[in-house]
Image (cartoon, rainbow, N blue to C red; front, side):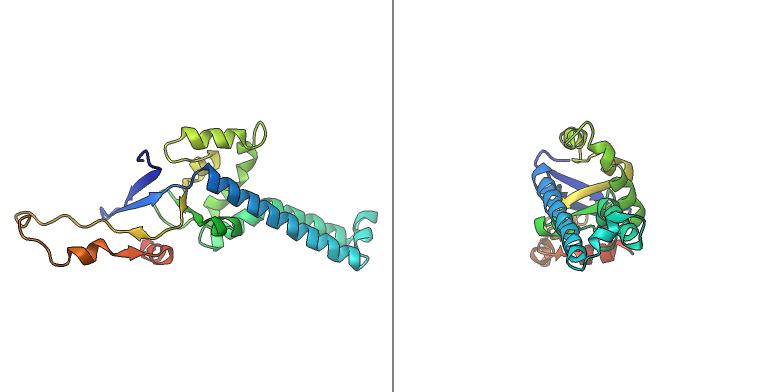
Length: 200
């Protein structure tokens, strides 16, 4: 990793991609936005239950409403991040707003298993409170990874176009300029195009 917060990833085909790592600020703001969204969803559900008179049933004793509310709370706590990251190109709504995303260390799209691992370890990253362990690791690790990222083999990067490095000139042709060099230098891939190529 360079000191400017960038990291390079080499594919098995010896092609290098350069990524800009997401730092504490953008990751923290994304988490705050996602937390506000989750609180808003919970508030909306509770308001609907209150207006329909079903909220009292949820707390009066065993009921389908109470069970459904518990399941919804469990989903908000554990699967909000997992499902969005696994099935929305590594982005929760908060990450999308901050233009960052989660990928595998090899540059490939994050899968369901990796998302489960990195998010289950949030409870450890939270220790001893206020994500102190996770924040400390962001500053101490080479690729700005918290414990969940290291266990899952993931990175959080800025969601910008990926630029191919210009290929080296063939031996013996260094004195002869390639007329296509200006075009090659401008080739950029969107995130979706890069992920599509990665699958092959």
